[in-house]
Length: 381
Image 1 (cartoon, rainbow, N blue to C red):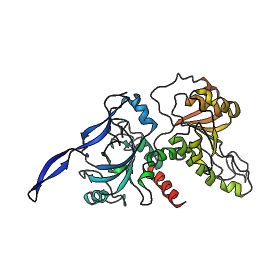
Image 2: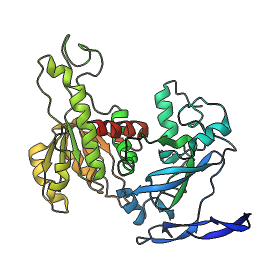
Image 3: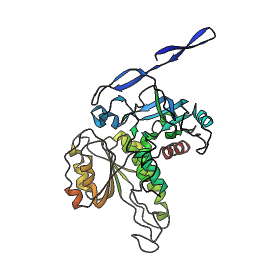
Image 4: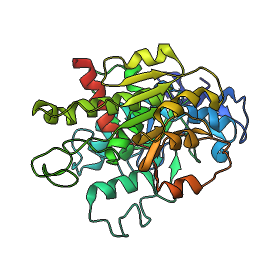
């Protein structure tokens, strides 16, 4: 790192770093990017300066290099790091006590903590951030302010330098302390794992234990039929979605099976890479290998054998044609969950979605605290 002189100490001048290495996208669509020296960021009031220990690479990062979001600056949004300092002029809370009112004391408590962070930075003053709209449902209010401030910046994606650098800044309110039992190599996956958990948070998949037993679709005294779920894509996010939904499937359909009900089918993961599919073995997921062809023909056999079969289909292909592929597997009046973000889109024909009355739901950033909890559980299992 670059250095400059600061105050004298014991007759010698102490060197203070002012520059750092970072992977920078110089202009929107700059497909190469470059590692260069940039100034170490100075945290705004209520923000922390975080030394990056590990940074992850996401398909969204690759799409940004192709022009997605028109981003320029330091790339990346997945990280684990250590809090170096906090600008306590405003904001900040104790990592172990959210209700601590002593600003300076609570800010100091963050220094040295190993953290991950929510990537959306809200303005804290709009109708979404202040809940001026309506929301009596506090969980929904929290999700709205976490993900959907209209004035937000997004770490490494929208007007906020990202994680592929020696340092980054985020509001203290965005930070989550990493449990001691979770390694840096595991914690760096907290953000994409949280995105997988978002599907559960949105209640997009129905299970046998949903609602009161004997109510809803089933007759009195019977468990409801769980949704049949398919996941398209065996990239990092697709694998994590499969793991999360597989865990939910086992946990939330268990009571029905214990009382003599039929074992519901496991979530099905369709992917093109056998070595990746092996990673979800034993996690409550049925992994189905499809052709490694790079075009749509690789899913021709899947459509022939599984067309209109699933209640919920998750597109995690990272491909512009993922929505079309997912729609071919979804039953009428089913749900399509979109996880792919692409720089280039396909021509969209809405007719099949109207005819089959499909529900199309976007799914984005999720609960990092839940992701860290799952990573902690993995350590114990």
